[in-house]
Image (cartoon, rainbow, N blue to C red):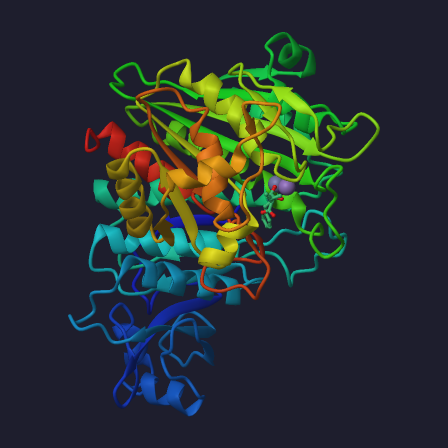
Length: 503
Ligand code: BES
Ligand code: MN
Ligand code: ZN
């Protein structure tokens, strides 16, 4: 993992392999942003025009490298574009800084040490830059024999412009490091191929982390799931050679006044089951445990930050495979809650494992429940590849999560749960079917989940099917593959709850 330190050096005196500075898009060409004054001086005040000669404009995400002149202790200056000059001088949105730092870190893959001299006007700015740089410095190379130097993430980040001895700056750096490490770990889990990451091996990773961070963990294996009547999780896992698991991982604080339950969909591979997905729709289905990875990462991050709130993570782990023992379309499952579900499509499996976890988590009466799932293709149709949908039974809670997501730089949108869609799930033989109308499929899935949430518990459902796995070219701090979507939102929600900011 990439190291990050707050440096006392100035931009001109730091010894490193590269120095990152910001440029903005001004009305008459690129302008150098604050933090890089000493660098500009080393270029005789002509840095902006040198960059412009090389084709730089200051557009967001643009990266331009220049050999450094005398006066600097780094051989290369890397200018990253921040986009148009903000209306208020040098007051940059946190997400702009995060993305710029991420783009710079990505462009420095294979480099050992880089100084970041981006505009820092506040603790929040420093935190955003640290977060973006650490998230951008990520590559998944575990399965490549020949990694060379070319794919090694930037190894060392020296953040300039922060006050290294100031408590608030130190805390911000520590928070950024803990958060980014856990997000990168979740990305690794999502990217790990499904022949190596299956319910049992995922549970073992959680167990090791629990031990390391002093968390309580309980792992229900197949036998325990049978004994506990977890019909949903067992039904989905029935076709696989790798049995399902339900993992409960808990962080508690002795002075906590509130408790949260986070539930993650953990389908380690979604073939569709007997309702098999066609080729072209199954190649990336290792990502179907991204919700469980996010919940796991968030609980560990909350523990590392020592927040004054209790958070229990529930990882509903199963592999959805077709076989002679698999659940068939037409089967009826008796769920943990006692309700019966007619499985009309075995590819609508996420809601089945989540239903058991929702009912089980509700028994402990948390103040709120949030589930996170790569649940429906329909949500991707509605919101695209970068935005997750938020549904729930409590409008103010749903709004709070949307605002928190916005604040941490995660794109999301509130979605309704229209009651009239419930009748599409009416079943001839069971209490409910696992499928309904095609139109509004993401909302239908949300309505199904709602049936398994305990009465009077605030609940929100995040459908991260779009943003969990990034198939297009990397941008900002977002790599190809697993992204770690929703972790920053979950951690911020825990912080807000710990601070007593939420009802
Ligand atoms: N895991 C998929 C949803 C998904 C699709 C996630 C693409 C990420 C990318 C989910 O289990 C699924 O198959 N959903 C079906 C539900 C349908 C059968 C009611 C879908 O969305 O098509
Ligand atoms: Mn499916
Ligand atoms: Zn799925």
